[in-house]
Length: 265
Image (cartoon, rainbow, N blue to C red; front, side, top):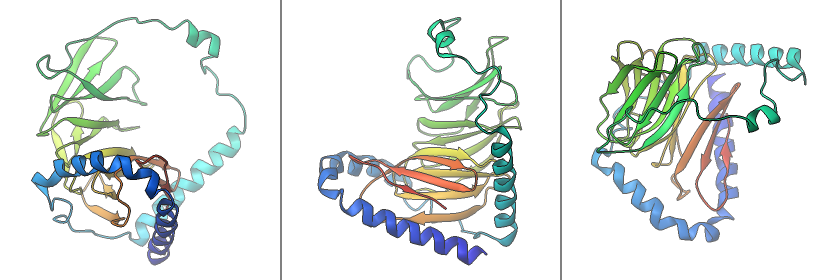
Protein backbone atom coordinates (compact mmCIF):
# COMPACT_ATOMS: atom_id res chain seq x y z
CA UNK A 1 0.00 0.00 0.00
CA UNK A 2 2.78 2.46 0.88
CA UNK A 3 4.59 1.74 -2.45
CA UNK A 4 1.37 2.51 -4.32
CA UNK A 5 1.03 5.72 -2.33
CA UNK A 6 4.53 6.90 -3.26
CA UNK A 7 4.12 5.81 -6.89
CA UNK A 8 0.99 7.92 -7.14
CA UNK A 9 2.84 10.90 -5.68
CA UNK A 10 5.69 10.55 -8.17
CA UNK A 11 3.27 10.25 -11.08
CA UNK A 12 1.45 13.42 -10.11
CA UNK A 13 4.67 15.32 -9.43
CA UNK A 14 5.81 14.38 -12.96
CA UNK A 15 2.53 15.65 -14.38
CA UNK A 16 2.92 18.88 -12.45
CA UNK A 17 6.46 19.33 -13.80
CA UNK A 18 5.22 18.91 -17.37
CA UNK A 19 2.47 21.45 -16.78
CA UNK A 20 4.94 23.90 -15.28
CA UNK A 21 7.36 23.52 -18.19
CA UNK A 22 4.91 25.32 -20.44
CA UNK A 23 4.79 28.20 -17.97
CA UNK A 24 8.53 28.78 -17.53
CA UNK A 25 8.81 31.62 -20.09
CA UNK A 26 6.08 33.49 -18.22
CA UNK A 27 7.70 32.76 -14.87
CA UNK A 28 11.06 34.34 -15.77
CA UNK A 29 10.33 37.75 -14.13
CA UNK A 30 9.75 35.92 -10.85
CA UNK A 31 13.14 34.19 -10.80
CA UNK A 32 15.11 37.00 -9.18
CA UNK A 33 12.71 37.22 -6.23
CA UNK A 34 12.59 33.45 -5.88
CA UNK A 35 16.39 33.13 -5.85
CA UNK A 36 16.61 35.85 -3.21
CA UNK A 37 14.07 34.11 -1.00
CA UNK A 38 15.88 30.79 -1.32
CA UNK A 39 19.11 32.42 -0.15
CA UNK A 40 17.46 33.37 3.12
CA UNK A 41 17.37 29.74 4.18
CA UNK A 42 21.04 29.07 3.37
CA UNK A 43 22.11 29.96 6.90
CA UNK A 44 20.55 26.67 7.98
CA UNK A 45 21.21 24.73 4.76
CA UNK A 46 20.87 21.02 5.20
CA UNK A 47 18.31 21.31 7.99
CA UNK A 48 15.78 19.25 6.05
CA UNK A 49 18.35 16.61 5.15
CA UNK A 50 19.38 16.15 8.78
CA UNK A 51 16.04 14.62 9.77
CA UNK A 52 15.53 10.98 8.85
CA UNK A 53 12.52 10.13 6.69
CA UNK A 54 10.61 7.28 8.33
CA UNK A 55 8.36 6.56 5.35
CA UNK A 56 4.62 6.01 5.01
CA UNK A 57 3.70 2.83 6.86
CA UNK A 58 0.64 0.65 6.38
CA UNK A 59 -0.66 1.94 9.71
CA UNK A 60 -0.46 5.56 8.55
CA UNK A 61 -2.12 4.79 5.22
CA UNK A 62 -4.93 2.95 6.99
CA UNK A 63 -5.45 5.84 9.42
CA UNK A 64 -5.59 8.36 6.57
CA UNK A 65 -8.01 6.24 4.57
CA UNK A 66 -10.29 5.69 7.56
CA UNK A 67 -10.50 9.42 8.18
CA UNK A 68 -11.14 10.08 4.49
CA UNK A 69 -14.02 7.60 4.55
CA UNK A 70 -15.55 9.28 7.60
CA UNK A 71 -15.26 12.73 6.02
CA UNK A 72 -16.82 11.50 2.78
CA UNK A 73 -19.78 10.02 4.66
CA UNK A 74 -20.26 13.24 6.61
CA UNK A 75 -20.25 15.29 3.41
CA UNK A 76 -22.85 12.97 1.84
CA UNK A 77 -25.09 13.33 4.90
CA UNK A 78 -24.73 17.06 4.81
CA UNK A 79 -25.50 17.20 1.11
CA UNK A 80 -26.17 20.65 -0.25
CA UNK A 81 -27.87 21.93 2.88
CA UNK A 82 -26.60 25.28 4.07
CA UNK A 83 -25.16 24.91 7.61
CA UNK A 84 -27.28 26.40 10.38
CA UNK A 85 -25.98 29.66 11.75
CA UNK A 86 -23.98 30.48 8.62
CA UNK A 87 -23.70 34.24 8.23
CA UNK A 88 -25.68 35.69 5.35
CA UNK A 89 -24.29 38.18 2.86
CA UNK A 90 -26.47 40.92 4.35
CA UNK A 91 -25.28 40.23 7.91
CA UNK A 92 -21.64 40.28 6.81
CA UNK A 93 -22.17 43.75 5.36
CA UNK A 94 -23.12 44.91 8.86
CA UNK A 95 -19.89 43.65 10.49
CA UNK A 96 -17.91 46.28 12.36
CA UNK A 97 -14.77 46.38 14.51
CA UNK A 98 -15.61 45.43 18.12
CA UNK A 99 -12.12 45.72 19.57
CA UNK A 100 -8.50 46.29 18.62
CA UNK A 101 -5.41 44.85 20.31
CA UNK A 102 -2.19 46.52 19.14
CA UNK A 103 0.01 45.08 21.89
CA UNK A 104 0.07 41.40 20.92
CA UNK A 105 3.47 41.70 19.25
CA UNK A 106 6.57 43.85 19.62
CA UNK A 107 6.10 47.49 18.62
CA UNK A 108 9.77 47.68 17.60
CA UNK A 109 9.28 44.91 15.02
CA UNK A 110 5.66 45.45 13.91
CA UNK A 111 3.66 43.09 11.77
CA UNK A 112 1.18 40.27 12.31
CA UNK A 113 1.86 37.84 9.48
CA UNK A 114 -0.52 34.97 10.28
CA UNK A 115 -3.65 34.22 12.31
CA UNK A 116 -5.80 31.21 13.14
CA UNK A 117 -8.81 30.58 15.40
CA UNK A 118 -9.32 27.50 17.55
CA UNK A 119 -12.25 25.40 16.33
CA UNK A 120 -12.63 23.76 19.75
CA UNK A 121 -12.71 27.11 21.57
CA UNK A 122 -13.41 30.04 19.26
CA UNK A 123 -12.42 32.51 21.98
CA UNK A 124 -8.80 31.50 21.42
CA UNK A 125 -6.77 33.04 18.63
CA UNK A 126 -3.13 32.55 17.68
CA UNK A 127 -1.11 35.11 15.74
CA UNK A 128 2.35 34.91 14.20
CA UNK A 129 4.54 37.99 14.03
CA UNK A 130 7.59 39.59 12.48
CA UNK A 131 8.99 39.73 16.02
CA UNK A 132 9.80 35.96 15.88
CA UNK A 133 6.99 35.02 18.28
CA UNK A 134 3.47 33.63 18.17
CA UNK A 135 0.84 34.84 20.63
CA UNK A 136 -2.16 32.93 21.96
CA UNK A 137 -4.94 35.39 22.85
CA UNK A 138 -8.38 34.99 24.44
CA UNK A 139 -10.72 37.46 22.78
CA UNK A 140 -13.43 37.17 25.45
CA UNK A 141 -11.17 37.95 28.40
CA UNK A 142 -8.93 40.12 26.18
CA UNK A 143 -5.91 38.49 27.83
CA UNK A 144 -2.74 36.99 26.38
CA UNK A 145 -2.72 33.27 27.22
CA UNK A 146 0.84 32.55 26.13
CA UNK A 147 3.70 34.01 24.10
CA UNK A 148 5.43 31.29 22.11
CA UNK A 149 9.15 32.07 21.93
CA UNK A 150 11.75 29.94 20.18
CA UNK A 151 11.92 30.88 16.52
CA UNK A 152 14.96 32.88 15.43
CA UNK A 153 13.17 34.63 12.55
CA UNK A 154 9.66 35.85 11.73
CA UNK A 155 6.71 33.49 12.10
CA UNK A 156 5.08 33.12 8.69
CA UNK A 157 2.32 30.59 9.41
CA UNK A 158 0.25 29.45 12.40
CA UNK A 159 -2.31 26.67 12.83
CA UNK A 160 -4.48 25.98 15.89
CA UNK A 161 -5.17 22.28 16.43
CA UNK A 162 -8.82 21.41 15.77
CA UNK A 163 -9.38 19.47 19.03
CA UNK A 164 -6.34 19.88 21.29
CA UNK A 165 -4.81 22.95 22.90
CA UNK A 166 -1.86 22.84 20.52
CA UNK A 167 -0.44 25.39 18.10
CA UNK A 168 1.82 24.72 15.12
CA UNK A 169 4.04 27.47 13.74
CA UNK A 170 6.19 27.79 10.63
CA UNK A 171 9.02 30.29 10.43
CA UNK A 172 11.48 32.00 8.14
CA UNK A 173 14.14 30.21 10.21
CA UNK A 174 13.19 27.01 8.26
CA UNK A 175 11.69 25.19 11.28
CA UNK A 176 8.20 24.09 12.23
CA UNK A 177 7.33 23.99 15.95
CA UNK A 178 4.53 22.33 17.89
CA UNK A 179 3.51 24.15 21.08
CA UNK A 180 1.38 23.65 24.15
CA UNK A 181 -0.91 26.66 23.79
CA UNK A 182 -1.68 26.86 27.51
CA UNK A 183 1.84 26.70 28.93
CA UNK A 184 3.77 28.05 25.98
CA UNK A 185 6.10 25.04 26.05
CA UNK A 186 7.53 23.78 22.77
CA UNK A 187 6.70 20.09 22.33
CA UNK A 188 8.49 19.44 19.04
CA UNK A 189 10.85 21.15 16.60
CA UNK A 190 10.55 19.84 13.04
CA UNK A 191 13.71 20.52 11.02
CA UNK A 192 12.28 19.38 7.72
CA UNK A 193 13.15 22.25 5.37
CA UNK A 194 16.18 24.10 4.03
CA UNK A 195 14.33 27.35 3.35
CA UNK A 196 11.66 29.54 4.96
CA UNK A 197 8.42 27.72 5.76
CA UNK A 198 5.59 29.11 3.63
CA UNK A 199 2.65 26.80 4.31
CA UNK A 200 1.09 24.68 7.07
CA UNK A 201 -1.99 22.47 7.00
CA UNK A 202 -3.11 20.04 9.68
CA UNK A 203 -4.57 16.73 8.54
CA UNK A 204 -8.12 15.96 9.68
CA UNK A 205 -6.79 13.17 11.93
CA UNK A 206 -5.03 15.86 13.96
CA UNK A 207 -1.89 13.73 13.90
CA UNK A 208 0.00 14.98 10.85
CA UNK A 209 1.04 18.32 9.38
CA UNK A 210 1.69 19.17 5.74
CA UNK A 211 4.32 21.87 5.20
CA UNK A 212 5.74 23.76 2.21
CA UNK A 213 8.82 25.92 1.78
CA UNK A 214 10.81 28.05 -0.62
CA UNK A 215 13.21 25.09 -0.83
CA UNK A 216 10.81 23.46 -3.35
CA UNK A 217 9.96 20.61 -0.96
CA UNK A 218 6.76 19.64 0.76
CA UNK A 219 6.76 17.41 3.81
CA UNK A 220 4.33 15.32 5.84
CA UNK A 221 5.23 14.88 9.52
CA UNK A 222 3.90 13.40 12.76
CA UNK A 223 3.27 16.24 15.22
CA UNK A 224 3.32 14.00 18.31
CA UNK A 225 6.68 12.35 17.64
CA UNK A 226 8.21 15.03 15.43
CA UNK A 227 9.11 12.36 12.88
CA UNK A 228 9.35 13.23 9.18
CA UNK A 229 7.15 10.76 7.29
CA UNK A 230 7.81 11.85 3.72
CA UNK A 231 9.60 14.65 1.91
CA UNK A 232 8.84 15.29 -1.75
CA UNK A 233 11.28 17.27 -3.90
CA UNK A 234 10.82 18.96 -7.25
CA UNK A 235 14.27 20.33 -8.08
CA UNK A 236 13.46 20.73 -11.79
CA UNK A 237 10.83 23.39 -11.14
CA UNK A 238 12.52 26.73 -10.30
CA UNK A 239 9.69 27.93 -8.11
CA UNK A 240 8.94 28.19 -4.41
CA UNK A 241 6.04 26.31 -2.85
CA UNK A 242 3.88 28.96 -1.25
CA UNK A 243 0.98 27.23 0.48
CA UNK A 244 -0.26 23.85 1.65
CA UNK A 245 -3.73 22.43 2.14
CA UNK A 246 -4.98 19.03 3.21
CA UNK A 247 -8.40 18.08 1.87
CA UNK A 248 -9.65 14.75 3.19
CA UNK A 249 -7.00 12.28 2.08
CA UNK A 250 -5.38 14.64 -0.43
CA UNK A 251 -2.42 16.98 0.06
CA UNK A 252 -2.21 19.96 -2.29
CA UNK A 253 0.82 22.22 -2.66
CA UNK A 254 0.77 25.40 -4.72
CA UNK A 255 3.82 26.91 -6.38
CA UNK A 256 4.32 30.62 -6.93
CA UNK A 257 4.59 31.69 -10.55
CA UNK A 258 2.53 33.63 -13.03
CA UNK A 259 0.31 30.55 -12.80
CA UNK A 260 -0.14 27.74 -10.29
CA UNK A 261 -0.02 23.99 -10.19
CA UNK A 262 -0.92 21.49 -7.52
CA UNK A 263 0.49 18.18 -6.40
CA UNK A 264 -1.99 15.79 -4.75
CA UNK A 265 -1.58 12.47 -2.98
